[in-house]
Amino acid sequence: MPKSKVRKKTDYTINPASRTPVKVKAGPSPVWYVTIMLGFMLAGLVWLLVYYLANDKISWMADLGAWNFLIGFGLMVVGLIMTMRWR
Image 1 (cartoon, rainbow, N blue to C red):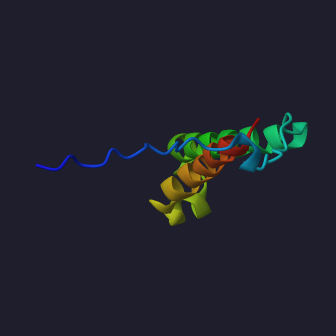
Image 2: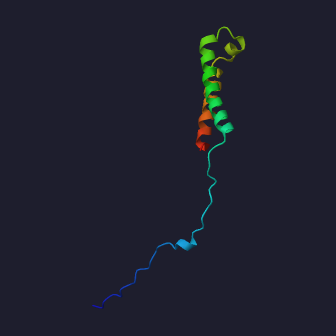
Image 3: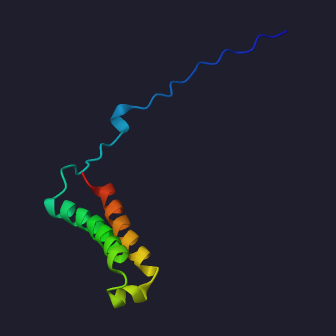
């Protein structure tokens, strides 16, 4: 029976010179960004607290009904989404 040829293994390592470095803009977030982020979260919390405590005393808020939950949680979610870009 004939012997099969032995193949040489090729080196599959990546040449480090072929990789191009990417500069990433890293640095702390500005103070105004953090202030707005926390402001959105606190505004949502205050909206829900006012809705629960003074719903019957504020007529336009009572007219909104369940939309108050969407407004309050929506403000908080915007603040939480902003935390993803916070450094």
